[in-house]
Length: 432
Ligand SMILES: Cc1cc2nc3c(=O)[nH]c(=O)nc-3n(C[C@H](O)[C@H](O)[C@H](O)COP(=O)(O)OP(=O)(O)OC[C@H]3O[C@@H](n4cnc5c(N)ncnc54)[C@H](O)[C@@H]3O)c2cc1C
Image 1 (cartoon, rainbow, N blue to C red):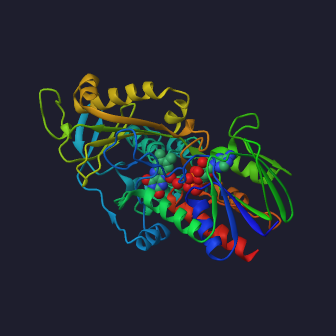
Image 2 (cartoon, helix red, strand yellow):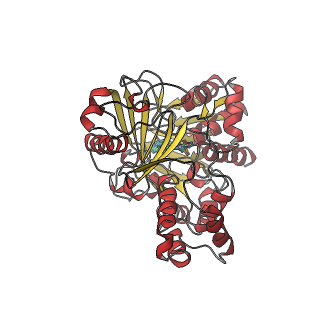
């Protein structure tokens, strides 16, 4: 057998590593369970949508140098979101950019905190009085709705860093969608001689130093001298008797335990493309219009919505994240659609029947129900940094690890995290 590297997973991490390795002269074979590349980047063009639509990652959060580097290579740029941000709480609508009121006071207490603790405990201990009830609500909504975190486990220090680091800055869209970056990584990898096997579900990895054998659910096997595992945290966390579980022989108890201890949140995205942007104008059917709607944050069951502005395309995206989304893991898509339409109708002062009459097409993407993701993205729990280091540590120069879930740094839960982890793992493999 030649000195091949097997890469499990053709998401951003696996593909970035694949391209780096193959361009450095290594023989690379990527095994991907789905019949498409991209993983949690899922830009789709089917189901009657009028343009490519993001079922997974959509925005760029922060400076994101590797993501920007890929865009630059493709001669692409990014465009900022524009429009008006609305909030609807207890039926009252207002225009507001502030997710959380009195952030300075919150930050003051967070900075005074002597040691990290779960966010829910911090709020009870430091902002327990009745007067802080709205702030507690806002912080919980931010942690759950934006970070997809469970506040009972989420790190208070992580929130401190997020709030200190300008977490509310504009998050632009990559020009040409995230899908174009994936297409480029695939094309470059294949052009340099890398092989990509789609619809190839790995169920077992057997290894000894310098030798790896991988078995798939359809009875094939692949051999290599090294392997890079980039599956999501949800797959690492799957129970031994569940469908997504990957058996590793010899087992890696420290890695598995580290993965299980890490925070991994759920997200449901509901994409609704309408005949036109009826929400912009008051009419007999819409009593609470939202002209120029960019983002809408609310206390409705499907609380968060956004448009595609500055692109005028009449697409509204509904978003539910965190424990509330995890509880709906097994709920049928049609029921989720009904719940999303009920929420949106209440927010716009219209009826679900009117929304349905305006709907051109729709898609529900329930990431926790997806067997190859089993969730959406990582959040930081107390003590996560040490566990991520364990999970990212190579074993016997043979097993290597990447994916947004093993990343530790300022871009937790993002495409940039995945790309960075892929770049790091490729470097480790080349140095090994
Ligand atoms: C709804 C949603 C919204 C998001 N929004 C943003 C955003 O706006 N901005 C941002 O930067 N990030 C966002 N993210 C996060 C971002 O999408 C991820 O961090 C990133 O895409 C993860 O890349 P990855 O390569 O680590 O994992 P993945 O993309 O999940 O790749 C892992 C691959 O492993 C494959 N796999 C799993 N099991 C097996 C198996 N048994 N055999 C073979 N292959 C297997 C999977 O199919 C997958 O393709 C979002 C994610 C979601 C879900």
